[in-house]
Length: 209
Image (tube, rainbow, N blue to C red; front, side, top):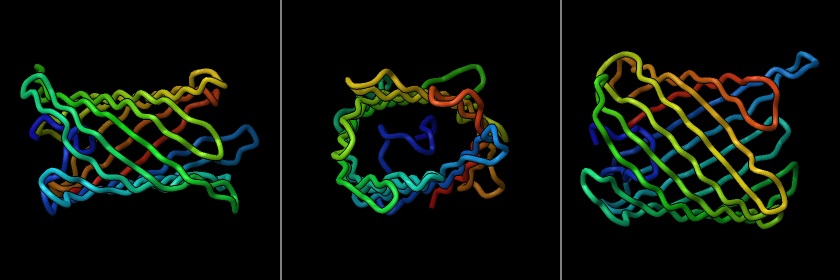
């Protein structure tokens, strides 16, 4: 786990260990107002080979999702990386309406060494069925460093595709700031996505217990 990220789908939590990530991302609209989204992610090691969790997202325009999930290991190839599978169910909502949502994810993770310290790579391929909307195919890539220092870089690239529309993408470079408490990490980053012409700012707090 020394080279693993604090939050990655290929790695499971140890039994009775927990992790939370709370974040807010803000964009400035042309009229001077702010568009934002908030998110809360949590996971808990229920058993040595079962991690359960919660994924919530809320946008300013009152739409988002709430998902519970379970993750199990699939294969471990030591230095070549590991695979895990995740099964999620919940709801996506807009204003006062809500509809069922299901998600299946296959995750790959690998730690590696660099001249600047330990690094890690996570690749998540997902099938997401939002029953009132569409079926999405997603591929996300996250990589970063986890050296024993104050600052570490991280890069996230998220993609989503449906046959009815073109590819949607998000790019999010960030800096991980180690807190005085070893279980706490502050995250400051920028977000650029296909839907907007401006750049947003993301702030997050990670905690491990």
